[in-house]
Length: 504
View 1: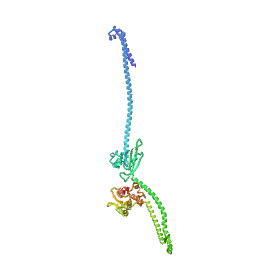
View 2 (view 1 turned 180 degrees about the vertical axis):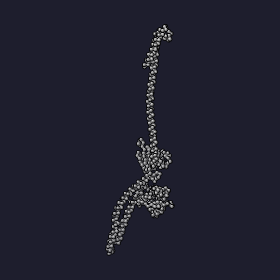
View 3 (view 1 turned 120 degrees about the vertical axis):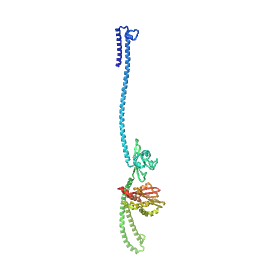
View 4 (view 1 turned 135 degrees about the vertical axis):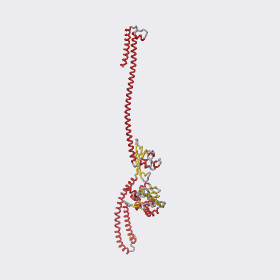
C-alpha cells in the first residue's frame, strides 16, 4: 500500500517540478507564454491554469499508475498465495504419496515374504501329503477331487492327478455319477467332526478298509472341503478279532476248567466206587443165588430172579459206561480249552492227503450230495504243512458243505490251485450250492459253538478249530456266501521257501 502512495506522491512532485521548470523558463528566457503552454496549445491561456492542469494530470497519472501497480501487486499476491497453496498441496500430496509408496513397498515386501513362506509351506504340505502311505483325497462338498497324493493315484490306478481333477471319487470306481452302492461317506459330509466308516475293499474284497473323513470348515462354520483318508486295516482287524477270540477262549477256558473240575469230582467217586460196588453185589449174589435156587418162584422188584440178576449187572455196566463217557467228554473239553499250540509241519503230498480225506468222508458225501466235483491238477508239488491238520481242515470243510442244505440237488466242488504268487501259492477251495449265509452269519461262523446247520447236528466248533489250524500253518481263510445260492470256503497257504526268506 505504501508503494501506491509513493507513486502518487512521486507523480505529484514531478508535476510540481514541471511547474517550477516552466516558471524558471519564463523567468530566464522572458517568453510571453509558458514553455508548456507553447508545447501543448497554440491559443493563449492563463499561465496558472496550465500549470494546475499539468499538476493534476501528473497526479491523476500517478493515481492510475498506482492503481495498476496495486492490481498487479494484488494479482502477484494472489498468484503467490495460490502458488504457496499449490506448493503446500503438492507437498502434502507428495508426503502422502511417499507414505503410500513406503506402505506399498512394505506390503510388497510382506507379500513377497508371504509368497515365499506360502511356497515353502506348499512344498512342505506336498511332501507331507505325499509322504503319507495311505491314500489321501481332498474333495469339495460335491465330492469333486481337488488334489490327491501319490498313494491315492496308485490306489485308483490313474496316470496322474491332472487326468482326474474335477471328477467325483466314485467316477474312478464305477464310472458313474451316482455314489457307490452302500457307500456311507456322503452321509458323513455334513458333519463338522471327523467321522469314519469301515468297508470291504472296493478294489480287493479280501481286505478291510477304514475311510476317515476330515471336514475343512469355512468362515460360516460349515464344511467346504473334505479330506478323505483310506487305510488298509485288514491285518489290524485280524489281530483285533484274534485278540477278542483269544479273550473269549481264555474266559471259556476258565469256565471249562471250572466245569471239568466240578464234573470230575463226583465222577471220580462214581468211577472209584463202581468196582467196589460190583464186588459187593457179587458177594451178595452168591447168597441170593442159593436162596433163589430153593425157591423157583422167587421175584425181586416184580421180576423173575434170573431176569433181575441179569438186569442188575447190566445196570452196573451202564453206570460204568456212563462214567467212562463223562470222563471222555471232560477230556475233550480239556483238549478244546487248550488247543494244540504248535503243529508239526513237513513236506506233505497234497494228493495223498485229499485221497485219505475222501475215503473218510465218502459215506456222508454219498448220502447227502448228489454231485461231487474234484478239480485237482496232476503232479501237484508237495507243500510244507502238517498232514494231520490239513486233513482235519478238509474234513470239516467237506462235512460242512454236505450239511449246508437238505436239497437233493446239492453239489460240492473241491478245487486246488497253484499260483506263482508266493503269498497265494496254494489255494484249497470247497464250494457248494447250498442255502448260503448272510453277512451277519459270516461274521460269526468262526466263533465257537456258533452253527447255521439246519439239521441240528452241528457243534459249532469245526470252523473254529479249522481257523486256528490254518493260522498256525501261516495261512488264511476267505469266505464268500450268498443266501440261497451257496458258499465258498477258501484256504490260502503261502510258499514255504519265500515265507522263510521273508522271516529272515
